[in-house]
Length: 315
Image (cartoon, rainbow, N blue to C red; front, side):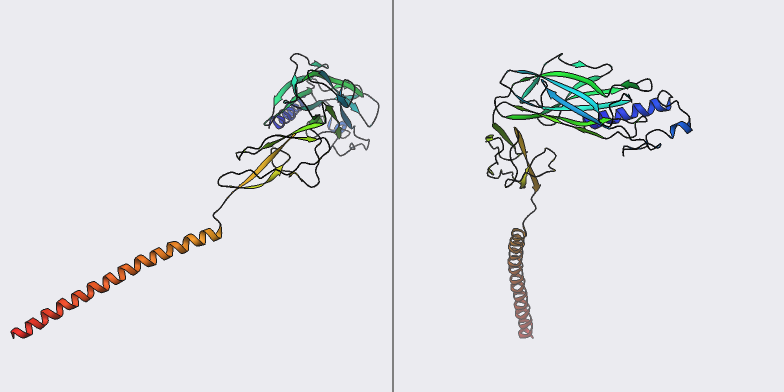
C-alpha cells in the first residue's frame, strides 16, 4: 500500500510541475522528439534509455555473515543502453529486508545529491528502505553510473539465509506518465544453511517453526484447524496469490508460509439429515393432532346421537 501511495505521489508531483511549466518548456514541435512510451523508442526513432538498479553488500551480491555483524547496503543506478550522461526527472526504489534478520542502524544512510529516504514497515516481517529523487527544475544531468545511496544493517538473526531485494523501482519519463525499461538484482546474505520456516496460520491452530536445510524441500505439516473454515493450502505470500508446492519447491531463505481459509457452508448430507429429522418431527406432531381431532369428532357425534335418541323416547 505504501509503495503505491509513494509512486502515485511521485507521478502527481511530476504532472503538477509539467503543467506549471517547470518541466516542459519546449514547443509542441520539439516535444515530438520526446519519449512517448516505455516501450524502448522515442518519436524520433532513437532508442529510449534503459536502466539497472544494482544492489551490493560490502561490494558483493553474496555475503556470509555472523550474528552481530554490520553490513553496508549500496544502491547504484546504471544506464544500460549507453555509457552516456542523461537527464533524470524522477526515480524511486524500495529495498526490502527481513526485520527478523536485520536491524536498521540509525543515521547510517548516506545519500546522493537530492535523494530522499525513509524506512517503511510492511504488513509482514519485512521492511523497505525507500529512496527516491524528484527534479524540481526540469531535470538534472546524471552520469551513466550514479551512486544513489547506502545504509547499514545489523545482523540480529540467529540462523539461515535471507535476501535483500529491489521492489517497485522505476525511472520516470519526463511527464511522469510512465517509466523507462528497468531491471534489478538481489543480494543473498548467509548466516547458516539452516533456514527457518514459519507457518502463519491466519487464525488457525498454531504450528511450530521448523528448520530446513537451504535447497531442501519442506515436509508437509499437519493441516491447521479453524472452526467454521476449511483449510485451502499454504501460500508463499501474505496476499495468498502463489501456492507453495511441497513436491517441487525448495527453501532458498528464511521464509513464512501463509494459510488460506474458506468459510464452510453446511454440507449437503448434514443439511439433508437435518431436514429429514425436522420433517419427521413435524409429521409426528401432525399425526397427534389428527387423531385428537378424530376423537373429538367421535365424542361430539356420540353426544348428539344420545341426545337425539332421548328426545325420541320422550315423544
